[in-house]
Image 1: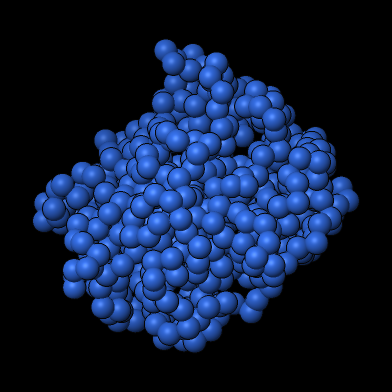
Image 2: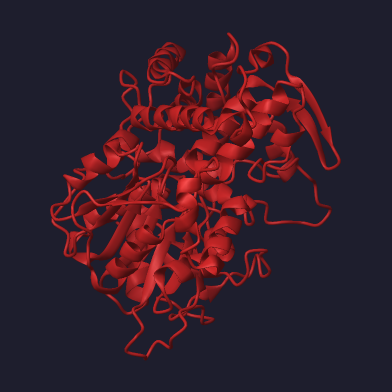
Length: 521
């Protein structure tokens, strides 16, 4: 039941512990912590919205669309605060654009927190290994860090930890729909949000209204925790394909169109580059460079050209351009004021860990199994991304052995309304697999590299998205949508750019260039 302030078209409780988030007007809705005990302890889901331009009693009003930005731990509240107006321009004025923080994340309570202060968190973050493909001891260090994290989770996360998972978030979405007085979900989920959407459609096939999954992740692959397999290998296959498009595009653009037209700066493997800018300082080493490159592959349209400039600068031992990328995490700053330390983050790393580790079966805890998994993952990527992806499951090797009820499949079902599934040209493997699980659904291909349709502006894609949400119209099978512009200068696409509503294009570009774009990376 919802009580309290009106936020959107339904009543929710105001969040008293964080009355003035930098993400604007945020409220909470009460849901069961444990759906097996619906009248027991409660959790609270943080919600915000960008309102429809028409009143709720207008025949033009089409209800709320829920959004998930991707990455377990990604904040839907932050997404709508930063990009709600852009999404409304794409979809139209008839809808409320609704963002929510999944249970355990950011503004939602109880949120997952393994640390008592921001300083404790920052100090430990410096110890944790992000890329294991950099030195001989990094697999062991990552495994050891996972054991410590497991102890902290067991000691500090309380009795709510077993209930932080994707299945319960899908059930929370159903509660949000019901709070609107509706029976069917309208939803657009990116990356991990595609997993959440597929799980909802599998559990509640009769409650699917208009549901888009975009930048599709292989849901079965996501939930699998068998160390004998190269988990999340499909993601790496797609990343390798996207990386090749960078070199192909740079070569085609030539030295006049691509700043990096030289050999890769291999010296960074053994000689990190010191950096001091007016606002930041640090080192550019191989691990940081690889993480930046992987992030760029999610949105090549906006970041391939800056990446070329970064790589060109590194050949001159200049790391400043890399530190100036807008999605790079800022240097930690300690505030003298007391803060709700997880409330205003874009990507909640502790919640991410809890969701991933709770979603699968228990991960083998031994170091030998972790090392074998790491080696399998290295074989799955030609560009060295295996070390980054291997850390995902190894980080769960020390997770507490807690009773948990989580989605175990099967993925798929006959939904009341067919789904729209969007993939990018180079990364269609998971989209093509998923469409087979939901009869009647259609894959729409956006003709660009990257991860999700937000990787590049496409009026064609926007038109299909709007038609689908308005009246359920799906594109023809094998439809491919062109995009506006290209990562590197291309005169052939200039004419198309001039036909696009410039206000929408400028707003879309600004969204891509903002730090909040980190949510979509």
